[in-house]
Image 1 (cartoon, rainbow, N blue to C red):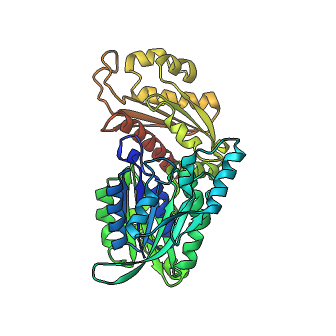
Image 2 (image 1 turned 180 degrees about the horizontal axis):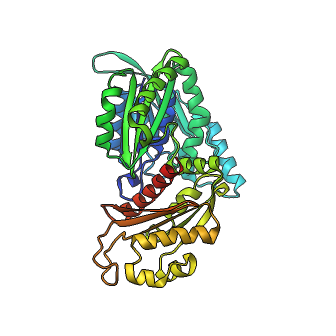
Image 3 (image 1 turned 90 degrees about the vertical axis):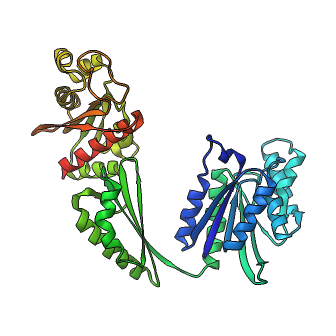
Length: 422
C-alpha cells in the first residue's frame, strides 16, 4: 500500500510555519506497514490543490489531507476533494447539531460560516473531532484512470491543528486502517553514534547492511549525531525481529564503543542511566554553553536522581565566586584555558559535593578582542571532568556558527562522560 500526504495551508509555504503533521502521520502509517511515497504542501489555492489531489489519486492508494477544514473562505479542502472526485457535498444534520452544542457549551453564538464545517462528501463518514469544530472525513471510493482501469482509493480529511489531527488519527483512523489493511509484522531498531562523520559510518557499515536486502536501512545525520534505522517486514513478528537483530549485531561489532545506544535512547539518557547504575551524582559548570548541558539532562524524566544541578558561570566574577577559580589564574591564562576548565570542574564538584563535576568553557563567537583570551580562535572549547580519582581536560576545535559550537560542546561533554563511566 502506498500513501500520499497533502498538507494544506499557505502559512506552511512561508518561513514562519513548518508542516509537522506529516511526520506524525508517516510514523502512524509506517506502523501499519504503509509506505508514504509522497508528501506535498499546497497553499490555499483551489487550482493548485485540485491538481495535487489529482496527482495523488493517480499514484497512491491512500490519500490523507490535513488542513483546510476551517470555516473561512480560504478553507477549501472539502470543496476541492469534491470537485476532484466529481462528488456532491451535503450538510450533515448530526454535524450541525455537534457544532451548535460545542458553541452552546462555551456560551458563544455560532457564526453562520461555521455551518461550512458540517459539509460532508457524498459517501463519506464523519470522524468526530473532540478537540475542535472541524470534523474529519473518511471516504472509500473508486476512480477510473486514463487507461479505463478502476482503482480503489481511500481519502481521509483531517483538520490542520496538530492536537485535533493527532486525536482523530489515533482514535478513529488508525483502528479503521488496521481492520482494512492486511496484517504486516514490522521490526525496527535504531543505533545511535555521536561525533562521527556520516561518510565514515557509511563506509564501515554499508558492506554489512547491503547484504541484508530484506531490511530497509536509513542513515540520518544531524546535531552531532548519526543514526542507523533498520526496518524489516516479515510474515511473523519473530522473523522480522530476528532479521533486524542479526544486522544490528554485526553493525555493533563493527562500530564497537562508537555506538552509545542500540535501542534508540538519547546520549543524555544513556549518561544518566550509567550514573544511576554506578550510584554516582553529577554537577555542571557551564560558561559558553549557558546551561545547555544542564537543560539536556533535565529534559529526561527523573534526572534528579543523579543530576544535582549546575551553575551558569558566564562571567569571570561568577567563576571565582561560585566555583572558587582563582582570579589570578583567569588573568594569567584566560577564562578559555585548560587550567580554568580544570578549576571549574573541581570547583563545582566540591561546591555541590557531587561525585563528578564537569565544566565547559570556550569561545562560541565572536572572537574575544582583548585580554588573555584575545587571539584564541572561535570554536576553541575546553571541557573538564573531575571525579574522586583524577581531573581530565580535553581541548576541542568546533567549526561552525555560534549555535553549532554550543551544541557540539555539549555533545563532547556527554561523550566524555560516557567514556569515563565506561
